[in-house]
Amino acid sequence: MPIIVNLDVMMAKRKMSLNELSEKVDLTLSNLSILKTGKAKAIRFSTLEAICKVLECQPGDILEYVSEK
Image (cartoon, rainbow, N blue to C red; front, top):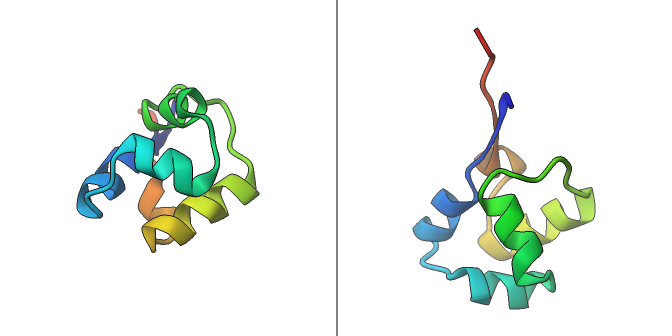
């Protein structure tokens, strides 16, 4: 998939665990894990907004487009 999820990178920069982010964003650990590993097929804007708010970042810090060659 040409969309790369860099959630783990932002979490590391903010020194935040998956459990802590899960609690602050009010998302289940399993759903957040699916997003973190890049296995998610979609993300709601409200979820993306909550993650960006907690991690103090922009959507582009989390999502990256890489063209397939």
